[in-house]
Length: 97
Image 1 (cartoon, rainbow, N blue to C red):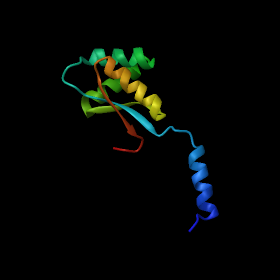
Image 2 (image 1 turned 120 degrees about the vertical axis):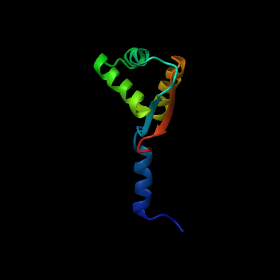
Image 3 (image 1 turned 45 degrees about the vertical axis):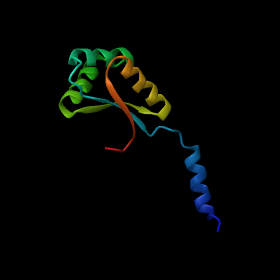
Image 4 (image 1 turned 30 degrees about the horizontal axis):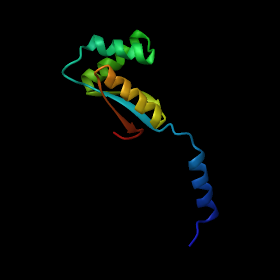
């Protein structure tokens, strides 16, 4: 049993879509100061101070924040960098809660 023309077209379209469905998530931890977390966001991602502080407060109050979205490879690199700064971070598929 083969695929219909529509199914083949959907598979081909899915293979052509860019891999942008991933997120880098930073999690709250009991170790790092809030000012340090904001500093890391400014330094690594180049965020302006206000945006970095907003994300830091989201981490602090909500337990986590999405700090970047893009390809899985890029998000893994960001997470590795966050680990290098001593922050807790993970990669997840966009849309996952």
